[in-house]
Image 1 (spheres, rainbow, N blue to C red):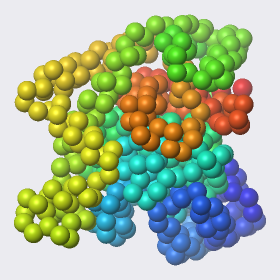
Image 2: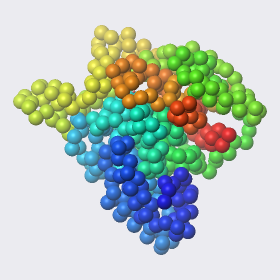
Image 3: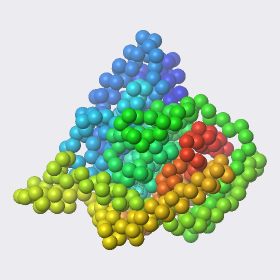
Image 4: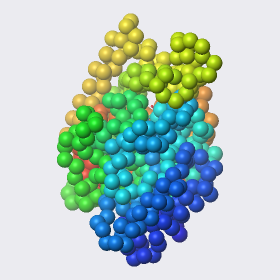
Length: 474
Ligand code: GLN
């Protein structure tokens, strides 16, 4: 058996009794075992997945109605909680912690007959661009094992790339779904902020965090989003906007207005092959009769400072709950309360997480609050307004997902500022709250995948998927 590239094909095979669902799950478990060196899964739910396969098979055999995601074998990033399961955000500080409840997105997958195969490695608390900031070791890119898969949802991208499952849920605060999707040659979406409930997603920066989806193709991605999106009583920030059946509307039938940002294509850090691949797509669109125009976005240089001031501020507040008392790890040698807090946090958090807590605490401190935090909030508003204005004039903005293809393991490990530059093209969508998707756009001279990113206005995921589908078939 081969790993499946589409849910449609799987369902067809199951209905025609080519395979049993159990043998499909067994196939993925075998793949996971055989590719253990990639370090993708922190936990594999083998027993539960096999039992669920039997249960679902019975449903099929007895002619009962099947869920929208019937049989979909899916992995979840280790920041999404499930009742009775260990979750740790790839951090030592959550050691031994077991969730008391199941998050909304994961529950909706289960309710539509998906099979959760396991919890996937990531950068600690989703902070990073290489999956190297994990307390459980780095994940390797399946295209070249000496390279990173991107981050922070690196393993969730590799799981789809390497055929260890059919899709996965990650989280995207500044690019953590789109950047690894680009590095691994798969599809990755960050929906509109507030489209998907964050209930059960361990918080990094709450006004940016979005659950996102990795898949082999657009249709599966769209189908999963229509299942997990929508109003939720457990998260008051979720939109009540109706959720369309995205996967049933994947046609483009009009001429489009498309913008590309001058500052992205002229960016010094942009790898020449990525530039060429992006221009080639834009040329193709022009030839197809669409209106393609260059637009200038002079605020590009303010994106990263704004993102890193606001997200570290939010993170320093969100992560204050990990104190050695309420969750997981407590330093064994602590002998009074203050020392217990200090030692537990010092030993429990990794370097990058501590760096961000300190940065965030600094920008929120009384003497610097206005100079950094308040100012960054104002800049965020300007960036958001200008991005939305642009998206009122154009249907889509097309840009590279990343400045380079997957870099070697260790290359940016000692240089956090260099690592932060990885996010230069992805954070605009998070700062503005708009949806964005990364799709494969060929490979470079070393055969490493290149990603193409598309942004559109809020709640236009239907159009975004349709356009992405159109470009993937080009
Ligand atoms: N690489 C970015 C960061 O380190 C994005 C992380 C994310 O989206 N979770 O903050």
